[in-house]
Length: 436
Ligand code: GAP
Image (cartoon, rainbow, N blue to C red; front, side, top):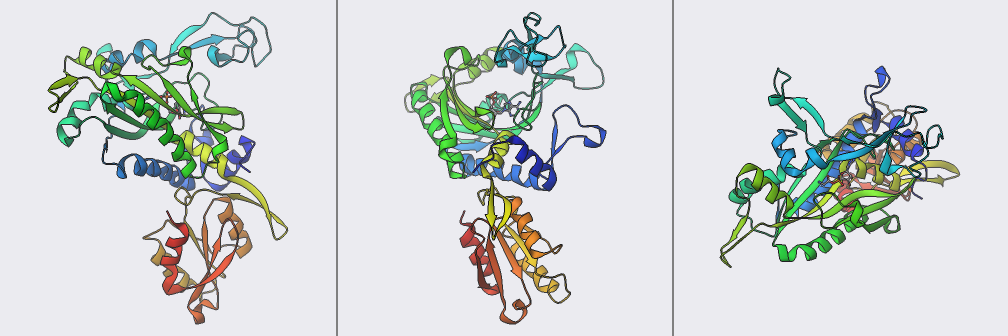
């Protein structure tokens, strides 16, 4: 059973070293989070799984890593300076700030319950502004990107000219984005600093509708393939009044979070909006000449845009489970092996000198192939519980018999079943069991 309460996962993540409140020794810092020893592995695995599926396994997508800092001209052209705003209201009674469009009842303050206490809504731009260089003058204004997408539009020609790709083809990028969210909430679900995984897929305009359908199906399936229960996922098409300023159609992949259905990623038909805007503002022609038809056209863009940190939260919630093993309650993260921070834990039964050399040797044998943990603290039962709780699919136990029979025990996280395996077959056996 996936977690029904966010607190279950937040506590586990703090206790086991996945996610810490940022600057915690100073009391934390405004809904920012640090990813600990296990969180950094899980987040990296989420991003790697996305990259593998979107770039590595495809011959029609290439990667990019564009700058986070960018000049106002980019955001002027993209429409973000004008349109990337949320309606902000203040409660005159308790002085709390709210995003008007996210309130269940736009007349009642959720904090103090006051009626009709809100100020007029002000449009608040979500971009973080800073200065590039030592002087804080208008000419030095720069913005932290609020989406990775624009770097892919501004590099459209560079990529086209250097890769010999032609539409339909895509540019993929994973990286940090920043939004000065009015109400960051639900742990790492909505933060001001977060990571995105975005694909801009450039297509002949006549093919946009068909590619939009294709990417909606493809992206939903990605979450299912990585272990999310299908019934906790859905695709929801945006109503016309929800659409972003650039979109001719958007569907969200939603997950059934503890607080209800909410967005994991958006798939949008951005039309030729971005390339046209950047061409107009930069004076550089951003189109494609098709030698087969002798026609020049501005490609349409279909964009699957996911959040890496948000996906990580959902994968944790979906994987969380509590069950009973031999009459003892345990918490287990049933993470897909591709996502699990550690694939294998090497556990010598005892800390005794006699077992350590063999256990260390097994760690050195497995570590080049699989991310491994080595743990020789506490009782073996407690170590199994710990590995279950952090989602390690396999535990390899080295016992005193191992010295004689040259075999070890492999324990499976989900079934807790144990099998004896000869050491010289261990790597193959682990690879077969992880099967990804
Ligand atoms: N380029 C299109 C774009 O950025 P978006 O729907 O605003 O679209 C895409 O963002 C994804 O990025 C979202 O579905 C979500 O997963 C993630 N995301 C957006 N804002 C976020 C925030 N404040 N914190 C965490 N993730 C966020």
